[in-house]
Length: 122
Length: 83
Image (cartoon, rainbow over all chains, first blue to last red):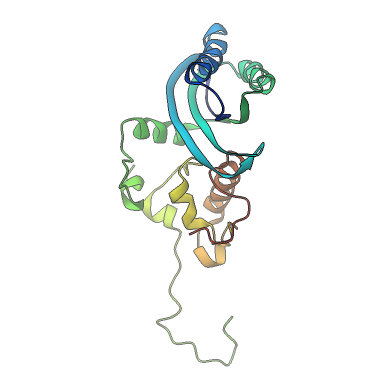
């Protein structure tokens, strides 16, 4: 039974553009090869880290929202662990409230100048 | 803390409410830094329920979201002047 997951991973900033692109494509391929389905893909680009990881203060942030069999997550994480370009990653299961939130977020319900009241309107 | 025999001026003691229940937020996103900053003091520590007044259920969600945000370097583990 397919469940929803969301993975955020950070790539080292010392990558060239195409190295970064094919790293991301590699992970998407891991998902699609094992009958997973990528719902949304976000690239926040180069962002400053709150603390230094591996002596670096910036990193490329990527977000993958996908639907997959639970067994696929361990495969994906092995892949993420093996790749040394990935500094850090976090895979999270998405429950129904998070699902609604993500859909509203994709539709831009939480635009830049949102405040608490606006995000709350469910 | 107010002492027993200390006169409490009523306007100070406001009825605290859980902002999540009141505004109907169901999910706290760990990626949204400026929303999480409201629940963290300027050293980066999670604010206790007695100050924010949030209910236990949402305090746990806030704590989990802050810890996840710290893991992916959205929030610092320790900071001197965060705000």
